[in-house]
Length: 305
Ligand code: NAP
Image (cartoon, rainbow, N blue to C red; front, side, top):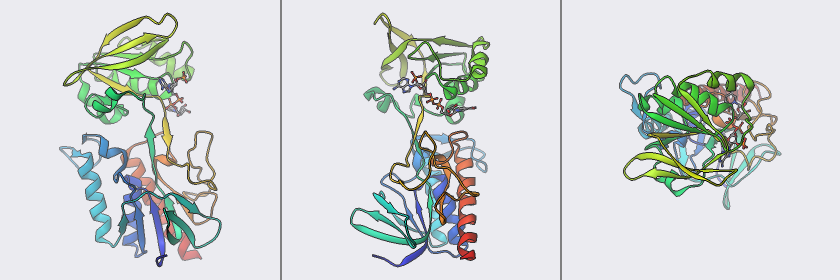
């Protein structure tokens, strides 16, 4: 068991690193568990063109490395391992990495969320090279191209709507006849002449050799196989927040952590930031902003104890 830290941050995406920069700079002792894949979802994208401050854009991995180094300047320590268990039932809070136990007066959960995937080998092969889960991040690269959005929820409608500003044609491919999307979002895409909706279609394969060239679709009713020529594919089949190990933390029906007071959770002294809380904006800059808020809240809460 090691010394008791002022703050343990679990997760190392924009929220976790920004929380570390603020907290360490405020002279708190900070230990950040980065997990086995430091940097979060941004490390799976290529150029990030909408993070303020980079006229020419910045590589997602590099942006995360810069954030990490910036937090280290102020004394943040890192452990590149996954937390396997937490005990928030008493203070100091305890977090476990296998057999190893770590203690802290406050905790910020910044574990993020993962886009749900179809589970195809071809999807992994083309990930960030024609297959994306973020139109805001990657839509720009498909100017005057044809793309498909997979899903029938609000995210799919929103992504299709956004993509139609760049692409010449957008197909929404949905596996059922009914949509989870709200009426207003559905009507908006139905009114958009650039968007076509294909219902009762399952994606069996993403086609292409060096780059994505299309989709192999299977009609759910008839079983008929067809091919759809597209240059890019956007998955909008939901996200899965990485919050499973936080049993005592209150979450909504989808598993996203609920803020009780500012960024504090139902457990006093435990805060949460980024995509593990937010399923609306899901942007690097909004996660970073919330990480900053959580660090300030943790520091003030600690000062008040
Ligand atoms: P969602 O509502 O859960 O919709 C996911 C969609 O993906 C569903 O249509 C589902 O099909 C489909 N799907 C799931 N797994 C699939 C698979 N393996 N293969 C093919 N299709 C699959 O998720 P979401 O659209 O991300 O929305 C999440 C929440 O955020 C919702 O509450 C939504 O209202 C909210 N949201 C709001 C806004 C807004 O208000 N502006 C924007 C985005 C999201 P089935 O229907 O057949 O299950």
